[in-house]
Image (cartoon, rainbow, N blue to C red):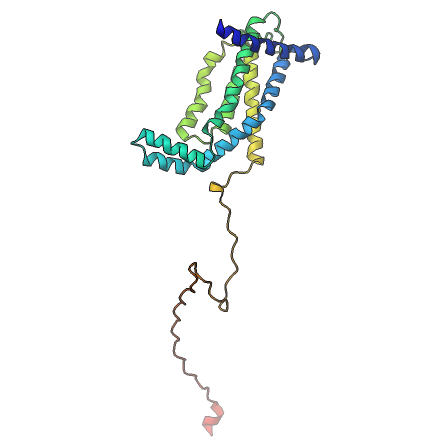
Length: 270
């Protein structure tokens, strides 16, 4: 009862939003789900920006964190303490990469309950290909097409968002969508459409991010400007303690070569 009392308001809010896009704006039910997805993704842009910055920071400081893990690999408690200290000193929030996913979870639950309890009300088609968005993914051949698009978009979105993982973890994350297809196929087509739109948004976001967002400079280092070129007449620069550095030993001068006098041939005949 307690869980139902928490989820019922979410379900009512989702139904009201879908009714707004369908009844007021005039969109079909399937495109109303797409519109809800776009609105959710726009609302999550600040969290997404934090996620991108956090992933870039983790990528930049990955060698230092690996060194800490190697140093304290025998002491789990000390390792966690040093990593948390490193995160604070470098302003890294490892949980920031999970914030957009956690924020979308209530939307996912609300949409699932709405499609389940109001399937008689929200039962339109999509692009004249999907006959019923409230039916299961395996109820029509078009559902398998959406599942294939979902798997491809999920792999592509994982490619852009899992840049900080090592090769093994990244390969696992890219294979998992293929294993989840058997689970996802049991959900309504409208929910698969929501997932697919979210993944396509993530792919476009990743492409834009790679072009527009600059990569962070490691440790905030700034390249030092090149100093003026020194010539032989430039006085030596003083060292940090105020004393002039010792002059370099002078190269020994080689003995001058004897000059060869060219005699005139005419004078020798005289």
